[in-house]
Image (cartoon, rainbow, N blue to C red; front, side):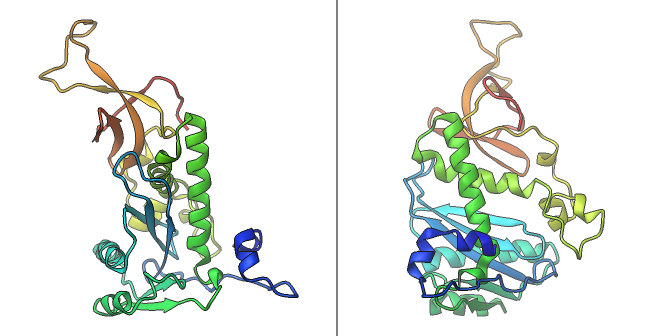
Length: 272
């Protein structure tokens, strides 16, 4: 985290001093769900899927499992709705959320947001000015999601309108990949994905093949409209574009609508 922050030219210009500033991340909680970090990303080009241009993110410090959502407007009210949904999801898993760490962003350090979280018995801790290392885990997560999204869009030759969906997909991919092995985890936990480590359950998406955003995929038609095997008059499938995934399905853009098939067949890519 320290090396990433030190290499950020924008922050270096904003916080330049005569001598280099030693930056280190704040101490992280080792209790799942106890402490979350929040940060946003944007504003970007409007998404071709839903017109959103901003991404909200919350990450669990102990398990590094991330939550994210896209929105057209980033306001305290939007963050409150998103944070409440995450807190309820954490409590459904038996996690007791006590702290949310935020930076000096106006949406997150507002009195409106802090009061709403206090109603849920959650304390909002605000970073000092230019103290980006206070939410260093979320900063690094935002950076890795953006780099992964840019790589997928470049690979698929898609424009900036696909960056927001690609970032959301990158977050899903990270949740279903092996977490960084930390010294306090057991040998079995070090082999788990972030999702399994966080929920205790290995989701079906962990076993499914995953493809990059923009992959051309075939989706079977409904049984009522699907033609017989080998038919050219009544095709059995239509072509769509993969734009993401959820816990038990893929997200496919087809004809301006988003479909959620459980299985897809790529035509121009191999599994990652």
